[in-house]
Amino acid sequence: MPDSDSQLRRLENGNIEITLILPWVDISKGISDQEKKAAGSAQVPGFRKGTAPKKLVEPLIDKSRLLNEAVRELLPQIYARTVAEHQLKPILYPHIHIDKGVQDQDWQFTALTCESPAVTLSFPLKFPPDIKDVSAKLELLRHNSSVKIPDMLVEEEANHRLSNLAENITRLGLTIDQYLQTKKLSPETLKSQLASQSRADLEVEFILQHIQKQQQLADRKATLDFLTGML
Image (cartoon, rainbow, N blue to C red; front, side, top):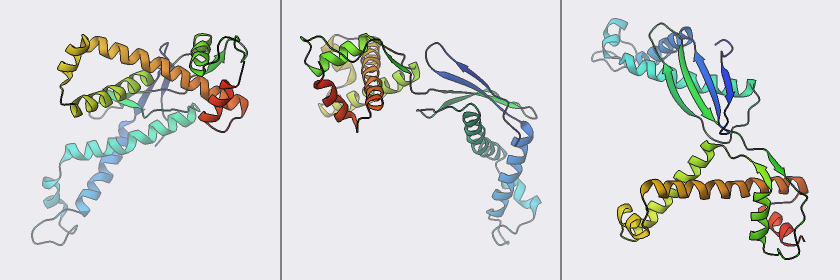
């Protein structure tokens, strides 16, 4: 497979969008490879497994499945190579969708991923004497730091929280609609609240990771202890 013909864009929302081109010549070869595998495992009455003539095996093979299998094997390869070429460090599995897939033409996909956001502390690690609670210190850090959480990461976290909430509601014998009525929330408002909470909590977590690395601390607990003891 030749080098990938990819385009990378860093979006304003923190996501990374990669255009992946999968040459038809590679897809065609992949289909042939899949066809050989299928022929080798084909069961035809009167013949041992994998020994039937090609003309008897071909009608039994699902051509669309061969194509899907070929693309499914090739796409992760071209994505991984593109990530290496651009020296990316993704923190989420990519969301990939097909843009163009026509017989005998190169196929095009868009992969969406993100990296850990850069963190810039806007002031030295020093707190006013009246701020002693670590939660208050973290909130002060969050409001006085620069950290742009990718929208993709916020969405993943918000969906995870929504899934957990739905499970807890079910255990209580309620439906989502009943819960929303009790809280006087619309589905859109709930999603917005979860997204807002997720973004704020993720900002705190990346700030903690930044401080942990900066101060060469062992783990998250050590970082919180460090902040607790600071004035």
